[in-house]
Amino acid sequence: GNSVTQMEGPVTLSEEAFLTINCTYTATGYPSLFWYVQYPGEGLQLLLKATKADDKGSNKGFEATYRKETTSFHLEKGSVQVSDSAVYFCALSVVHTGNQFYFGTGTSLTVIP
Amino acid sequence: DTEVTQTPKHLVMGMTNKKSLKCEQHMGHRAMYWYKQKAKKPPELMFVYSYEKLSINESVPSRFSPECPNSSLLNLHLHALQPEDSALYLCASSQSWGGSSGYTFGSGTRLTVV
Image (tube, rainbow over all chains, first blue to last red; front, side, top):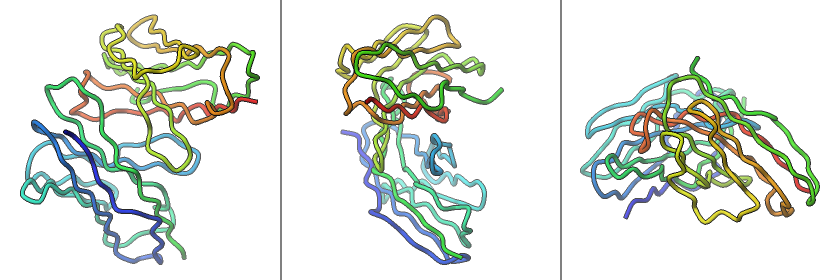
């Protein structure tokens, strides 16, 4: 079946620290992979995506590489800011099944000054 | 326009009330979705509309009634809700069902049932 396993949180980092949030997946077919961010009191925003193996998605200093060999899509940022404090969701969508997104459980990130 | 607009942002309703949540997008997306999100949890799919037709109902209780009047609008009619239905209700859209291009989410309606 299809599923996403995401690193447990919460994660607390100091400003300018390096961030990694792990995400692995299982999928039938050919998944597209996504990271969504949810700031307090808001909806989900698409942060980045990758639609095929070895693609790297990037946005706002965040990066994630679609690794088919390890079925992973880890989120990284070299230097986090207080404004990055949010919940991050890894998700996959399997093309051609007409199916919905499969979300990970979410990882709460708090960045302290 | 690259947004999904949801109204109202907050709603408090009694268990005997009838209310509606509204969602609108003008991106030409042909698939629209309702999700329910409880605190500290990922969104849970409720309904999928594809080309204005209901394609998925994830065994949602009948006190939630979706409606898609046209390709830009999605409503969720609420009646006789329970306190446990209190949650953030998110609308999303995508170019087509399956969402390989990603979903665009609205900012949600925070519903409290008293």
